[in-house]
Length: 330
View 1 (spheres, rainbow, N blue to C red):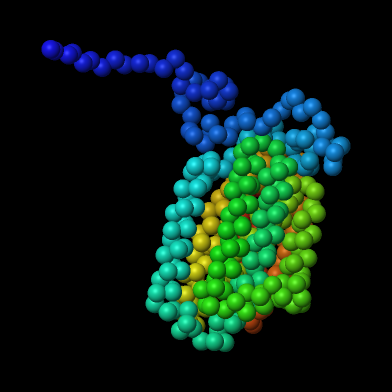
View 2: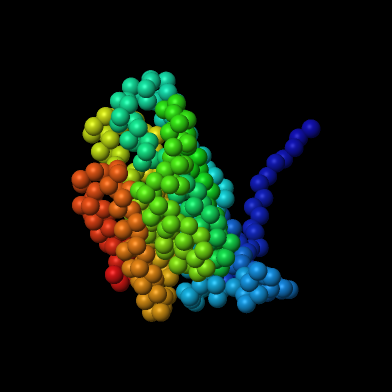
């Protein structure tokens, strides 16, 4: 018996979805990110207004003073849809787990001087509460922002901040210091050093304009806090006692550098859309920069000592340069 096999070439009738073909200007393949992002925002048949905010539709562009000709211009340059995000975070988590395992295996945490360890933990551990607040604030942005391009990226930031809070808790556990974890909570609640930062993030929890919240939390506060603590403070600890804390906070540093790409891209797109946006974003950024810098002064002093003011000013100027690069006027 003889069988003849032959190859048949099948030409697809369409290369992508109709709404993507209209956006791309041609019927050509689109990325998974575009397929999972573009034009998925519900725009009609809302049926009812939310009882807790009847002045708004359930999905409403009027929830912010920012306006956009196309809300999908606020794209994520990382091209994160759920699958891509989970793979990226999985790789980062594998690295973090390896760092924690190495510190434990070699007894590096136990070798740290007691006073230096207590000082470092007194700076890092209260920040798990700031990360939890950032989780809540980004969840608000994800809930009330308009356009899937914005809301899905904000939800990824929401879960990232929850992971950071968990890693900071684990930092205390890595040093076998449950008392320090508990002390971090009490410091967050009562220590005068932390009350300005606590008030800042709690005020953000009642900020109604989600884009202003995006500026105040993701651009301003994270843009100052992460370089101060996970950059300069870690450098100080490295020089004095070795890189243990840098190893155990690698996730935070890598995440911050990556997340900034999304934050800056959103600001740049919104500022370029119209002059009103540029003016409003610049005003918000200027107001929150002044407050956040003053808010972080006691935390910087706790971490960096006599160099705190100079380093805080340096970080502030770096963030202002980022703002100008994104098209804001400061």
